[in-house]
Length: 268
Image 1 (spheres, rainbow, N blue to C red):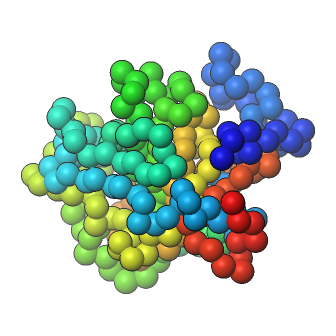
Image 2: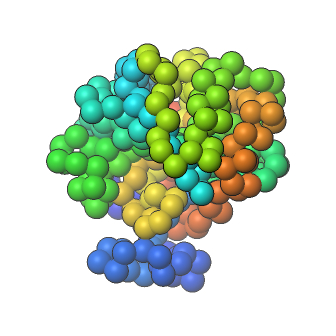
């Protein structure tokens, strides 16, 4: 698909997307590529050629996560020096290497996810960040239009999720600690994703959702949320009550999806 279809600029964007926190050397107003967005199922474009759930190649290597650090705004899990975990797909031209993962949440389970679906907010959202290996570093890649790829996993209040136990236990150790806390040896984040049979997704061109909001991200957001208990979520809220960004204007961007049906009224 021509990139112009993804980045059609509407004049309304200039009135609704703030550029005050963007770097002065990139994307001066208007900024048509900000994230997150509300995923409107009636406006999705089904792309059966490039967007298939089984075309996602998420290669998570056990032991690739080195440590976790808590700050005043959240937590971040960092990779080790010899990280081998990668992400590629039929709609990404290159291979992307795992750089970190973190999460966003709200003061209660009624909000917290950054992306929404038809206006529905979820309790939290986990972001797995990757950088394009054709660039020399994450910092260099972050400045390029195709530099980053982020996988978004929506979290919904539900039953206790044992797949999140190790992460939550490590967050507990990190709270109030000004040094990184080691991740358990052999830890794998793959269990934090939806199961392999529930990985229909949307993809669109967007930005980081934290300063400096660089517009260098190809987003992949899974449509099926993962359950997590309110008790588990309450541990995250001990870091900060809420740390999510509200939805930004789509600005005419095409949002492609892997799942066809009556709710995806455009086919490519």
